[in-house]
Length: 265
Image 1 (cartoon, rainbow, N blue to C red):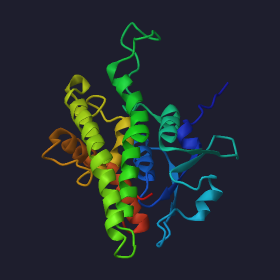
Image 2 (image 1 turned 180 degrees about the horizontal axis):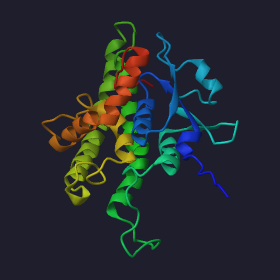
Image 3 (image 1 turned 60 degrees about the vertical axis):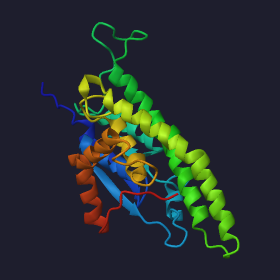
């Protein structure tokens, strides 16, 4: 009796990324390049006046934000729509890792399934999957709001007031918090497992991909300088030199004509 070996799920599934310029969706594109997942890319552009995402994205997901992906399983016609960067990354890594190192080994030898048996690399991985959006990204969003307040088109006699408000937010809240976070990350790079050059060890993980966006956006404008944080600065440069990062950027340039590693609200 002859048997047919089913094709790998990556060859049968249909994955579509709804990509928005200057948004967090660029790291999802990088992830799919690393996973070698066949995908379709649909590009959206921000409104040139408001800089907000176009209303067409609400047809994909009710919040009208990016990144969003849709995944159609083999044999199905109904796609699953998934939003939120960390959820998207975890879902794709659950199904499409294909022997990559993007997920660190979870348990130490002989301690499989035991409480406290997790490897340091895995614990770091899970931590940074939450930290990227839950801690670091929130500071960047506040910094953008403060910058918008400072640069808002108001009458000249009100300008000193808006500038003072933005300055107080920056000096009283943002600067000390950014300093704490960047010092923490500098120490995390220095203490990476197995003397690695990434946050979770010697190999690039999905957590590094998730962390790339806020760090690239913060570089040079939130107190993240090479002089103050040389290890963290070098880490960000290493991320930009990763083949998957470059390939994702080239893909956008090929389709859209330009690529900007930045973000808007």
